Image (cartoon, rainbow, N blue to C red; front, side, top):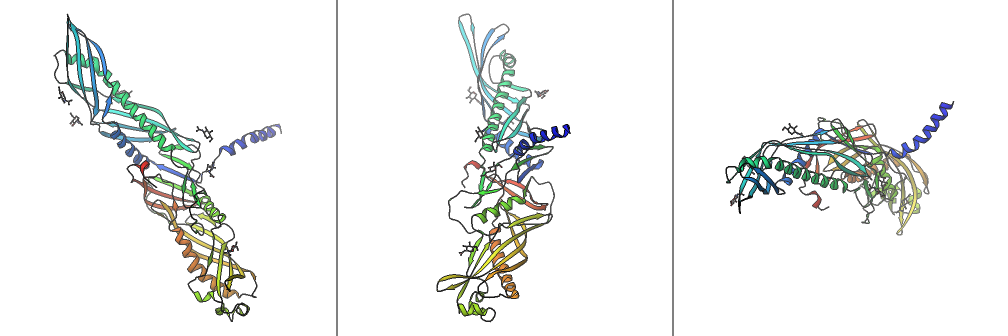
Length: 485
Ligand SMILES: *[C@@H]1O[C@H](CO)[C@@H](O)[C@H](O)[C@H]1NC(C)=O
Ligand SMILES: *[C@@H]1O[C@H](CO)[C@@H](O)[C@H](O)[C@H]1NC(C)=O
Ligand SMILES: *[C@@H]1O[C@H](CO)[C@@H](O)[C@H](O)[C@H]1NC(C)=O
Ligand SMILES: *[C@@H]1O[C@H](CO)[C@@H](O)[C@H](O)[C@H]1NC(C)=O
Ligand SMILES: *[C@@H]1O[C@H](CO)[C@@H](O)[C@H](O)[C@H]1NC(C)=O
Ligand SMILES: *[C@@H]1O[C@H](CO)[C@@H](O)[C@H](O)[C@H]1NC(C)=O
């Protein structure tokens, strides 16, 4: 009893903090090993370009030379060049990512000079030197955390290890060579290592600011934006990194003219291809339903229709015999249909299937001396099924009509025959509603891809309540930060 009470108290203490801490991502992006390798190659080649030529601070030393005595020596204008990456790897550890590179060819050039006092004169000389480095290993391990919904990259460890130096001096006295090598090798080595390490730290800090500056929303149109705030810390698994994103649609807050949007999104395509893709983006049902709720709330899921494929149907004369009262009250008048969703369309995703249902009120209006008079209203419940495609960096789709049911909500012109509503609705939904929905779905909405990258060879899977986009990624923008909208 006491134990149960204690457990209950414990739960009371624990549950609220657990609930508040458990942010719920609706989109997760998993970068696989091949994706990491792709990003690593991009970063390593840019780092190599950024490092060389590298200027290393001058080194001054007093070296003791047998017979001659103390000689002040300076290595100046030390420049590292000709850096070539032989090999690089990226691996995921428990708390971060480790990138290592070995450099095959590293050349240094510099000037040497020395001076010493012999009796009352000062003897000095100077010349050039070049240094060939056998090889160099460079490594960095980085962690990434979530900080206020943005990614914060920090360096756990960064190091550079140079193997032996081969120094050649041009000119100079015969005793100079050994003295220079003895006195300067280690200093040059550590100066170069420090300079390279600080360049890499600089690069990591740029990468950190880049990640930190990623937008927290992606505007889709004047109504909706996708909330791409990061939730939770990235998850480092054995050979992948998972990033969780809020992913729901939020009002875009843009003041641009409202484009007329229609019903929500729905998609499906059977799986194909291999599983070695770089990037996996999983979007749950709620993402689509949040979009649908937003467009519904914005009042955009309604439309007044005065043109349909069978235009004659929108004239009371056509209905003279079937709905005599309509014709008697409004002879030979034009008609308008107000099609409006009565609740946000709901999207359901299942293995190999995407379905959506939309509840509509179709209000029949008559145009009587320029006045719009509602005469009847039919409630229609429409079921569509869809397929998803990736088009550019967008997730797009198309739907087709599965079935629909209807009831007559009210009528001021007497009973409407079921078969008549049935055939008019069939035309309306198939030839007007579905093409209209598809005209929006073919544009789709942007997947959360960093600017400068593009999705390649994507395929789409649908599973229990989620759509998974699996793809490779290509780098298209040289200077992502300068790219305009
Ligand atoms: C670096 O040194 C190697 C070997 O001496 C040479 O082949 C290469 O051209 C040099 N590279 C640069 C950029 O000086
Ligand atoms: C080597 O020194 C000479 C002058 O002594 C200079 O003209 C030349 O440019 C130097 N070479 C290099 C590679 O620094
Ligand atoms: C996170 O945001 C809050 C409120 O916006 C702010 O007070 C806090 O300093 C931020 N933390 C960091 C680490 O930026
Ligand atoms: C640097 O590399 C050498 C071999 O090239 C190795 O023996 C040494 O342990 C390395 N040092 C570090 C700190 O990795
Ligand atoms: C976006 O998502 C984050 C994390 O779930 C949430 O804290 C934030 O309130 C959302 N933004 C809006 C405008 O809803
Ligand atoms: C269409 O019908 C909806 C609901 O039935 C109503 O809110 C809206 O005002 C109507 N639109 C027009 C243009 O009459």
